[in-house]
Length: 378
Image (cartoon, rainbow, N blue to C red; front, side, top):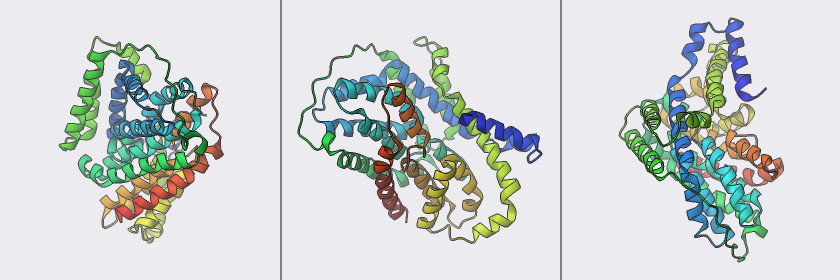
């Protein structure tokens, strides 16, 4: 089964077997997170349909003349937009563009795709809207958008620099030469400039409201809905771009984890685990990384909720969980949805990203970025 189907089945069985009643299942779903994710997906869909990302790609390729500069451009664009929007969506949009670009420039696409996947994870550390687990943490911990960004943006920036460095060092034949890039063949593009400016304006306004302290989910869903009011693109095209299975998966996971917490963990396990020193940044980071790679980052965050909420400084603890759960996604190919999206898009175009090719880059990248994050938040 796919992830959405498995989450739906699991949630249904939690109710069917009496672990949760229907009211408890409904209450377990954090609709604020679902609304926030939906709103940001609508914005990203409008930017893609307007041709904005291809404009950015054309702008970058017209100015880079070295493979290392191209890698830095891919990492920068992916990292910045993953912080502003949802990293999974950015990978969906950018993976075909990076593949096409690498082929037209006669380069090996794999290192650039690895840079894209890892930069999307690294950049998304910076904000609540960067990835689904951050959205959940923002909702559970009630951390202001500005506070979250101020504490974690330095970690994201250092991680993006490390992405460029590690990918380049481990692919010396691709990057550590002075061979200039060939001039790319022009690719005709007709961007919808009114829609580009409207979408960018809506995104800027939403970020302004986020920073001003308005409810994040409310701002996101209103901003996304406002973008549907246009004659520039049919609403059906926007709906087609929304990752509905991802929304279904998260709704199901909320119910599954709530049932797991009630039936398996319970007060005794909470008390036993609570004796661990989760106030220690290194320990909490290590537990989060291990759990994220066992059950994925979103379930890991939900499972850790009762243990983090009771700490003396829960806000710092939640920031540690956000940092570690997100950066843990770079460790292996299957550790984050963003990695899988890039790998699947590449496979559909005949390009394979082997597990070990990802791991040899992801392991040192994850270790170095986590060490900085632990030091910074300590």
